[in-house]
Image (cartoon, rainbow, N blue to C red; front, top):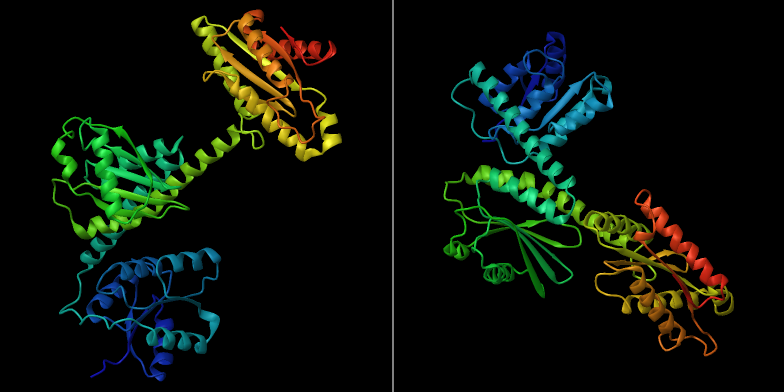
Amino acid sequence: MTRPAHLLVVDDSTVTRTVLRRRLERAGYIILEACDGEEGARLALQDRPSLVITDVEMPALDGFQLTRFLKAEPETSSIPVVILTTHEEGTSRYWGRHTGADAYITKDAGDDVLLEVVRRLLANAGPAAKSPSAGPAPSQDIVARVVRQLDDRLLQVTIINDVLEAGLSAASVKDAADRLLAHFSELLDTPRVAVAIIEDEAATVFVRRDVAGDNTDGLGTFLSSQLGRSGYLFASLEVTVIASVGGCSDESAANLEPELFHLPLRDAAGVLLLWPSSRPRRADAFSKLLGDTLPHAAVALDNARLADRLRRLSAVDDLTRVASRRAILSRLAEELERAQRYGTKLSIILCDIDHFKRINDTYGHLVGDEVLRQVAQVLLSGCRSADLVGRYGGEEFLLLLPHTALERAVSTARRLQEKLACGDMIEAADPDLIVTASFGVACDEEVETTRAVDALLSLADERLYEAKGAGRNRVMP
């Protein structure tokens, strides 16, 4: 036999409850009444009404707290809740929606609106509520449950905030992974934990605690097989052990099967790997914690990946693929500080392509761009691995030569000038196109340590202009 639709009306106003009871009874519903949120919670647990209509401002528990309580309790979570109030503010509607209310209606909306919402919610209601309990829930039990819910929610928000803060403030993907895995290790009581990021057919795995001792190759083989068996495809795998704690380097630990959880990353596959803990784990609490936390951990990792990508892009000149002006000047300051600290020498070379405007005007900017790219490659090919080449601006390039005295830097510049001048290094769009460059060279021992960056650049620039004034296609020390 179908149970009649019982509606619970919760309002601290006797007049309002009476008016609502009469309206709803005329529509064929059986009405229960509660004078505040606490009584409403007890009646909902006891009688399992088909739907709850609640005011917002009430003593004991207000309508928002009552709604949150009913939606969080397994016995009442499927019961539709309608907030019926005089509050029209956007913040009130927003909070009502986020506490779980199925509908938010102002009291001046009219009987037809309320009845239509009630009919719709009852028609769309999920499975029938469980049978009513044998007796009313005691007042202190309601309060205890509300406090527990608030505490659980505070814990959840705190965890999510810590995860986001740890990841979003990280300086790199590795730093973000380190901080996030530290949180997961503590929160889930899982001493062995890792995160894998699979992008562009390459898998990068950051491991917190070394599950295979010092045998990183063995760990990589093991992780590769675990990820491959789970359907993740990649051509190469790199393992970084970002924390290794004593007592966890047992070789047998490598044979433990990790639990794999998907991290919803943008344009990449993310996997969280958790090794079994020796302590018992509450499956429901464990699953809920992961479900609440993993999307936010993915956001933090994505932010770190984006920051890394932007740093790489800002450090490289788009056209020539050598260091950008910002990157080369930052590196110059670092190298000067290092040279001064350790008493070594640093030389720089400023290179400017001769008559570059004429090249653009005669052959077009596409050819000019190609000349810039090829000159950059000639400069790179003529430098040591310790040197750095950057695009200083326009058709000018800046070369940093650490541990290099002026004489050796001049020799390097002359070798580069000759490579360009011979014409074999540049594939010209026209046989008549000849590309040469002028060079200005300076060493840090020629300038004062105060404002050394500006002084060194200024000296190299002066010598570059001397080279141009002397006829171009030459080196001026």
